[in-house]
Length: 166
Image (cartoon, one colour):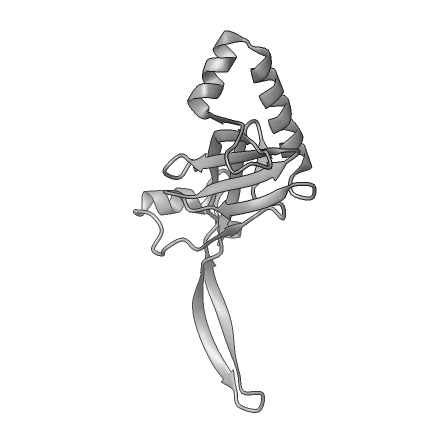
């Protein structure tokens, strides 16, 4: 359908004019490396894979159903999970150091050496992701999702902002 639209007009413009999409979005990752870790955040880039089934028919000999598709959704969204905490891991049951985001922001304001150490550890983990990190959890749910990874003696938790950033 988008090939028949005037220049500068997208299918999203048409949806907006006529009251929005007529389907529930079916999101799937766009990137192979999912999520993308950078700038002290985990970012999810997703696209809707919904397509209208215009027709279907059954091949009796092969016992298979074939579908013909009509309209498709072109929507994409980006969601950002900000760094929520950094924990220094030790062999003990209790971590030696756990800094929540408020603690990290306070260290930045005070311009301490510990802040520089934490930022350097975060950057190293983000650059090493996903091949050289231990992925503890990746949950892209907008409301309560989180990303937790471990790298070089630290655990990094990225928390959902509570909704879509699209």
